[in-house]
Amino acid sequence: MSILVLAEHDGQHLRKSTRQAITAAMAWNAPVHVLVCGNNIDEIADEVRHINGVNLVLHASAPHLAHPLAEDVASIIVKLSGNHTAIIAAHTPFSRNILPRAAAILDVGMISDAIEIKEPRIYVRSIYAGNILATVQSEDILQIVTFRAINFKAADRSESITAPIEPVRVPEPFNRSRFISEEHHASDRPELTSARIVVSGGRPLGEKFEALLTPLANKMNAALGATRAAVDAGFAPNEWQVGSTGSVVAPDLYLAVGISGAIQHLAGMKDSKVIVAINHDPDAPIFKVADFGLVADLFEAVPELTHTLNHV
Amino acid sequence: MKALVAIKRALDYNIVPRILHDGTDVDIAGAKMSINPLDEIALEEALRLKEKNRIQEIIVASIGTSSAQDVLRHGLAMGADRAILIQTDKQPDQLGVAKLLNALVSREKPDIVLLGKQSIDEEACQTGQMLAALMNAPQGTFASKISLDGNEISVTRETEGGTETLALTLPAVLTADLRLNEPRFVKLPNLMMAKRKLVETLSASDLGINLSVHVKRLKVSQPSIRPAGIKVGSIEELVSKLNASGVLHP
Ligand SMILES: Cc1cc2nc3c(=O)[nH]c(=O)nc-3n(C[C@H](O)[C@H](O)[C@H](O)COP(=O)(O)OP(=O)(O)OC[C@H]3O[C@@H](n4cnc5c(N)ncnc54)[C@H](O)[C@@H]3O)c2cc1C
Ligand SMILES: Nc1ncnc2c1ncn2[C@@H]1O[C@H](COP(=O)(O)O)[C@@H](O)[C@H]1O
Image 1 (cartoon, chains in turn green, yellow):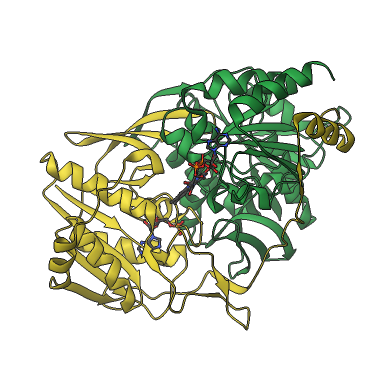
Image 2 (cartoon, rainbow over the protein chains, first blue to last red; image 1 turned 120 degrees about the vertical axis):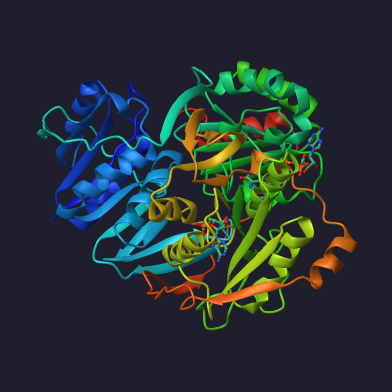
């Protein structure tokens, strides 16, 4: 019996979170099979076959999978489920849309966003916006789990490994859901969830959000992040949101600018290695988690920081 | 057209949770409880569709102990037409909730089922997708915009790097993202009036569901707390600390 990992890609590249999920899969000490779904994605299947720990690539290719719908991917997973002890993925918007659907069809309970495997079928996950850790046990024989990617090191690629690729017969499309369009914010900056440095801003940045933070982020080769309040007000796009209802990040450096430090925001960044906060309120809760806090007006401090970094 | 909205009673988002002495669960005795914020957004969306005459009836449903009546009354006060409590002695796991809601769907036959994208206590982000599977219905999760057009609903939803728009044939299941709308404020007279309205109470067996546990909570604990840091006096000092810590340049 083997472990099935649902791969995630953007049509061009495999996402790093898939390699982190592959590391999580190794805990089972069983063969790791990776399911890649899409249309014309030979290159991605080829990328997966060279990842450490992968024993088999299951390649599901069909025109209707060009924009894969949860309904269709779940039915592929259900079809493949018989040969597997566990079906897992990283806890990303893609996978958390699909895996619960597959789980319910299979009458299996699901564990979301696990940060650790304690023993077979026992996991630790964080609840209540990161304030509580829960140890949970799955009572099912088949395990369906999403993992918090940042808690697992990404499995390496190695040319010496070449797992076989096996085509999967794709079931008929579910025809009551249709893809219409998608909108991507093209950006050449590092991806928020895998960047080494994140520069994140809150509500007070206002209309100056990008004008102030982009030069600083450029200097540090950082991804941009934001609070819910900044996103709600339209100062930053939704996919920058860090927190319990956004992305969870753990970069080497997280720079929080004009962010109060609400628990829902902390839930998304408090495992960063070094946290810096710039806030003019010395009592702002963000300072409780900051390694280095600077009490200052951000409209002065950010340009000065950008400028100083020029000279180091 | 008819909408069913699933609303959960959860610890209020402003309250820091405490743990029971025996470490088995979070201590909610006496703590402020509220409607899960994302479910309030789901209900708000249904109310807006009703105000535009796109749907005629809104049912709110909650699963839990009899105390879940208060969030149902909150739902009635916001403008829901009927409220149903599926009473259980403890909170079922997500698959259990989905099965109970599915049984309610078979009884009520709603055209649209709305849920929150996740509960703020459990943060599972599963129930809507599970329900859609059990109904064999299309799913539009993490929705930030919806529009109803005849027998189809178009849903703009959150993806990894942006959004996508799907068209779903009704009946369909939607789960609300925070961005979907800003819920209305509930007026006091409406709350008073809702106190007198009927909340229908059903049990799992009334719905023909035999609940089994799939995910069991063994214990809860406090995560380790970050050691307190220091305040720096200037940008220069900050930059020299960062240089010393080695995080600026790998
Ligand atoms: C269900 C739910 C889910 C949520 N999920 C998330 C989430 O995932 N992510 C998230 O971020 N939030 C989330 N929130 C919102 C969260 O509770 C806070 O409201 C939000 O994080 C506050 O954002 P903020 O810090 O930008 O704004 P504010 O709370 O307004 O804080 C601004 C801070 O900037 C400081 N400041 C103001 N002006 C200056 C200046 N000139 N110079 C320096 N400092 C200044 C202030 O002192 C203050 O501390 C959620 C809320 C709910 C109810
Ligand atoms: N006990 C419950 N009663 C009513 N609705 C619920 C319950 N549990 C979960 N839900 C719904 O399912 C959504 C997702 O919850 P979860 O899968 O636990 O994150 C919530 O936002 C609610 O809309």
